[in-house]
Amino acid sequence: MTAVIDTPDLAVVGGGVIGLTSALAAADAGMRVVVHDAGPQERASHVAGGMLGSLGEGLPGEEALLAATSASVAQWPTLLARLGDGSQKGSGAGDTGETIATAADSLFVATTATDLEHLTRLADKVWAPALGAGREIRAIGPADIRELEGALTSRLRGGFLAMGEGAVDNRLLLARLRGALRDAGAHLRNDTITDLDAVAGRQVLLAAGAGVPQLWSGARIHRAKGEILRLTRTRWSVPPPSHVVRARVDGRMVYLVPRADGIVVGATQYESDEPGAEVSGVRDLLDDALTVMPGLASYTLAEVGVGYRPCSADGLPLIRRIDERVVVAAGHGRNGIVLAPYTAQRVLEILQHNDVQQEVGREDDVYGYEEAR
Image (cartoon, rainbow, N blue to C red; front, top):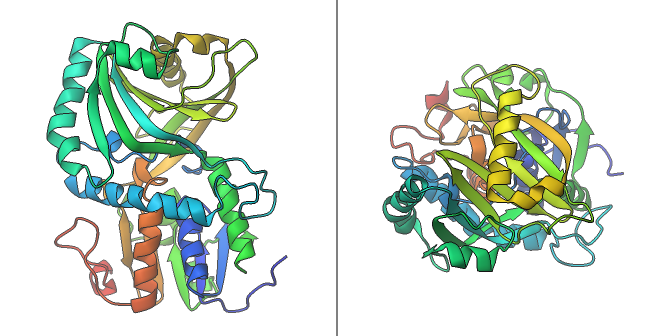
C-alpha cells in the first residue's frame, strides 16, 4: 500500500469519476495526491450508463455545453489508452483484461413519426453544427437499423447513426482509475470529509458531486435523482447490442447501453430527494426498453440503481477556484462521465497556473476566487 502523504500537493475530496480523473491528471503531472472517498452510495458515476455522448445530450440553447462535451469526447481515447484499455495488462490491481469501452457508436431511433420528426430537428439544428473532425451523423431507415441491430423491433420508423458516440463500463472505469492512481503513487483514503479547512493539502479539489453544497455554501448545485436498470443476459437471451441505442418512445427517451454481460437501461430524472426507486419510473424504463428491444424479456433484472446527479442551474459544470487553496469541479449533471477528461484538463490548468480563466460557457463568470465568494 502506498504510504500516507503528510501534506500532499493536492487533496481531492470525492472519489467519483470527476475526482479520480482529475487526481490522475495531477499525479501524472508530478503532484503528490491524496483522494478522500466517502464511498459509492448514491454516487452518480456508480449509477450511470457510461455514455460518451455529446450529441445525445445536446439540446437547443445548450451550445456551450455541447461544445464542452464534444471537446471531451475527443479526449477519451487518450484517457482509455492511459488506463490500458484493450490490453491484457491494463493499469491497476485486479485488472482482468476487460475492455472499459463497450461501444464505439450510437443509434438514435424513433418509434413514431412524431418521434422521428423530433430527432430530425435536433440533427439538423443542433447536432450537425457541432460535429468535429472524425465524427459523422447520418440518417438511417428501418432496414438500416435492422441490419445494424437485428434484435431491435421492426416497428422503428428510422433514426440516425452517430459515429464516435460510444460508451464505457462506468464501474470498470472507476476501478481502473483507482488502480492507475495507486500505481502513480497516489493514496486513496476511505473517509468522509465534513470540513474543508481540516483537509491537509497545499491545494484542495472539491469534487464531491451532489455533496458539494454541504462543504461549500456558495455552490449553486442541486440534486436530481436518477434511476437505471442493470439487466443480465441469460443463455436464452439475444446478445446485447453492439451500439448504444438511444430511443425516443412516444416522447420519452430511453437508452440501452451494452455491457459484457448485459445491458444498462436508463434513465429517469426527478427533482426529488426521496430514497429508493419509484415504481412508475422503473415501469416506464422497462416498458420503453421492451418496446425497442423485445428480446430483453428473457434477461434478468439484476439491479435497480438510484443515484443523485449534481446539477447546476444553467446545466454547465462549475470548474473554478473558490479561494487561495480550494478549487471546485462539480455540477456536471448527466454528463459527468463524458466530461471527465475535459474537466481534469481544466482543473490541472487551474492548479498549475493559479490564474483567472473564463469558465465553461459563462461570459460573465470566471474561475477567479474573488468572484466566487
